[in-house]
Image (cartoon, rainbow, N blue to C red; front, side, top):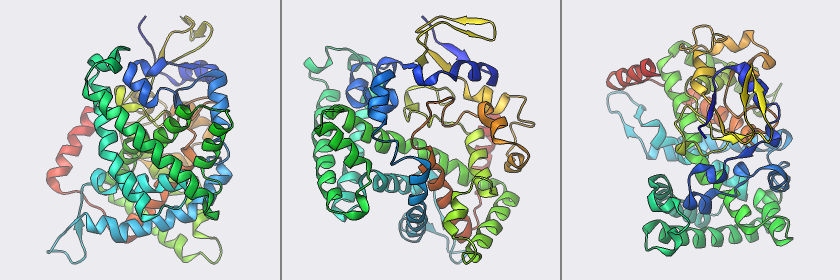
Length: 413
């Protein structure tokens, strides 16, 4: 049976009102190897299994908990720009202090290490080295997942294919790192609320399986990396292409820094009603990617991952039979949707005129309905923190040869 595609906010509102009861497609409809890597991560579990694993993550990723991370996100953003970004950039001799960098490549380790510290607590240099060393192995493993072929079949583990060898190597090293990270976190007072502790102890108590624990941590770190990097990079590029918006954000950030006596700067980063926050949301609207499950790479980038309802659904007069996989066309809802006046244009100020409930089903970002991305509260603050520091310390611009390529991308979208 083919998937049903939702293309309007009304369709999404009707179908996703019961999303907490929906079933995710087994192994994301991607076969055996995918199942061994991420098949039982919390983002792909359903029903009672989803509730059983999710309860051990709700507190660390709740809104109140996310505000506790904000100060660290700000510090990490400043450290990253001063050290890692400059080290990985090209200095431009014609303009004193100017640097040139490719956003996705230069910025990807910021969300990686920021999320790693949320998951595992403060990282030692040796832990950072292990995580970076695991990244190429994890990337090669997922290339095998995408390649498909025999890797999709249940007979794959009995055949001498590279995907199986990579899987065993990664699983052994990842299990070893997580176990060591748990022990390390127990000894660090700053890490006592880390998800690695709640998940590992839930496994030891028999409440979740070891695979669920390890795959959920993998989902939150490695599988999430491309998604967050995409969001941060496009936000920077769109600000670079829109100097008036960039100037407005910079002025807002500088003013917030100057007013720290009246309101802590972290409170500014936490707020959802700032122009900074609007820029992050507008970038996500124009360049949608699937933050709800972190598994976007196996679906076309403008579509969600498949899920189904346990009973027949009547959506706008159309019958969607039970257990039929349904996906969301993010392009139709985020951009082509008449709700967004001039929807192809970058205009962060549009959110100043809109109420949150108006936007709810007109924007596909963290998912719809009761079941949304667990990491959304942390992700929002992380993206605001790095964006604020970038525009505070640099004036962003796009070289002419790159700008023409970006214009072509915008015309095609």
